[in-house]
Image 1 (tube, rainbow, N blue to C red):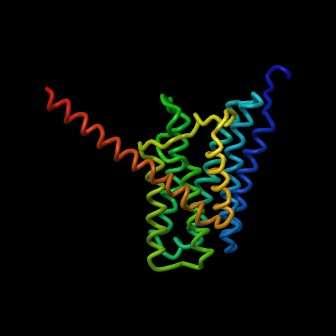
Image 2 (cartoon, helix red, strand yellow):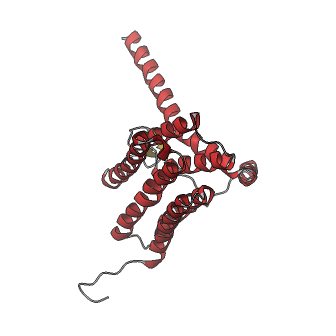
Image 3 (cartoon, rainbow, N blue to C red):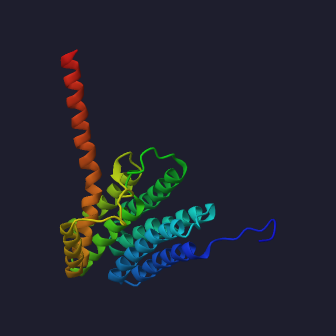
Length: 245
């Protein structure tokens, strides 16, 4: 490489670009009323986002450019895209409340990613705030499920609004979520766990929108349950210490 010139690694950034492409593709499909395809595209973007970082580490092609490019692509694929998909599907009929909720979600995604890039993480086992791909998965699976079962309007509009605002708030909160970065994919696992994984894939294949929503909504709630039980544990410990004193 000539002095003064810098190159970029192609392979991991190709996957980042693919995630960006599917995010943009989802927006196009949503504007055409093809919400099922839009939701599928969001999940494909999630897969691409999960692969680019792993491939960069496996091939030793990590770079500052890749980190920044990945964050910018995530703002589109997991911020702007799900917000516009759910807005085109149902929030658009709620007037100002609808587009304000959608904008809140986009802004929360950008803030979440900016905080993630700048803060020093002491415990890599946890994320601070709901990860943006998981938040996007909750909204995409919700739209997919409701659209497939032809449920729209009325109470669903307000549930969709609350879900959009709640996931936005969770992204910028201090609630901890498991990162699963300590998951050992190379090590041996019991045969029973393998059967559970296979069963999970079968259930998702039988009813993708409902099962995907159940999985990611459960993950969304897990942070609140963990915060609740951790708070109760701290209260009990403080009470015991005060009684002993």
